[in-house]
Image (tube, rainbow, N blue to C red; front, side, top):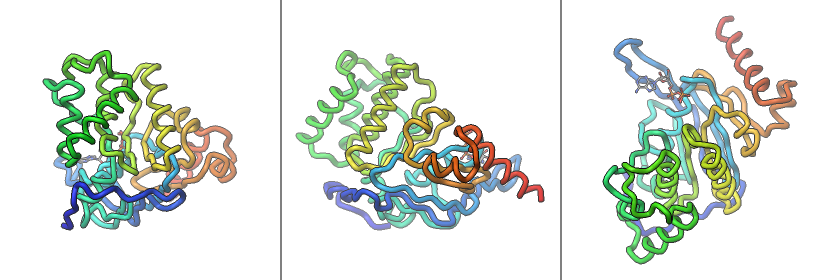
Length: 268
Ligand SMILES: Nc1ncnc2c1ncn2[C@@H]1O[C@H](COP(=O)(O)OP(=O)(O)OP(=O)(O)O)[C@@H](O)[C@H]1O
């Protein structure tokens, strides 16, 4: 495994260039009850800098598995995945330097408050103390966390925890942000803040790849949408492109059209 200097600046994002790419990505799980589970079955994905890409799929389609592999939390069985040009298997440290990852299982230490949490994770990223303190101030302001900055995570609401988690994910200013169902469990105000935040990342040329079950969110936010089912990408494109391909107007109809074709192909 190639190691990197933690102080080395992240790769500069170039709008329109590939930020995330998977080729024939496969993941098999050994499940005690079900035997071998093929969670990913040759997934090809390509997300660009300056783009918000939404991954849609029914339960068990392989969304979390994909995102966890891209965040180097999980090893693929076969195929290839790169983030910011670095291979997730052979250059995982460089991938981590360039990626921010948020999922429901992103942990926070119950006894740490906002600043302590961000200091802890900032040091893990190797951020220099002065730069880290400035970055933490910036994030506390940006995520409006000042009113509960001394509260321990164990005493925060789920919306407050989510803000700390997202601040943690972007501490090192990653060029690629990977979010697994980022608005699940959030109230309307927190959801709206999260949506604004995702949109703002694109303005700075970053890539955001996120999974969601909320179709209206995907319709509103995404430049391109990928539809995943049985661990394969059935289709991807802008909303107008997907409308044209399926003849359906809204995302629920588009989604159903892709899945029905795939189900028929599986039965045939
Ligand atoms: N650790 C594991 N061991 C065995 N099977 C697993 C494991 N993790 C996931 N799976 C299986 O792999 C498949 C894909 O799961 P994954 O969580 O990636 O789907 P998903 O699209 O994120 O689903 P959801 O929308 O329900 O979160 C499912 O059949 C799931 O049961």
